[in-house]
Image (cartoon, rainbow, N blue to C red; front, side, top):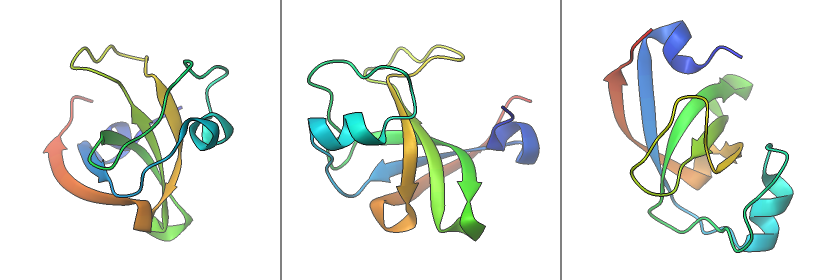
Length: 94
């Protein structure tokens, strides 16, 4: 899958504006598995992977901690524009 950086050359980061408990995080996770106890908290930072529905929804990925690995994340799912706040746009490595 091509991500936003591959298409636009930019990486968008966003802050989660609505908490997601363990059950909701598991239900909305696009990955095959969710780590036990995983939940998203208000203020967690996510990376926007793709923009959907003319900018009303975003496919995002979340990696817990500072160790971000290429092609790896702890959670991936679709969040609406009201659930995130874009806080940064940087030139990405294409």
